[in-house]
Amino acid sequence: MTPFILSIETTAGQTFQHGYHLGTDERLARQIAEEKFHMRVAARIPTVTVALMRAGKIVDVFDGEWQSERA
Image (cartoon, rainbow, N blue to C red; front, side, top):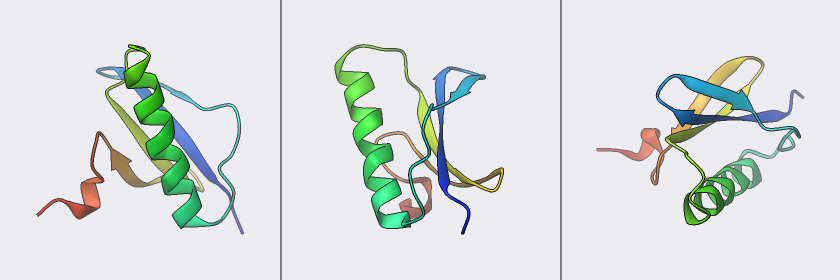
């Protein structure tokens, strides 16, 4: 199974991939993505969103809440 990767958007349009994969368990990958987002924001590191990716495709985007959970 392909592992999840974290893509981090630092400013509008500027992204990079986190150096380590997040494993294959989606629940755990989402938890790690949320933690990374909140740690970067708390440290005042420019962060717009983090995207959970798998096999080169975006699974979901987090900016304080998951895009898929918005009403």
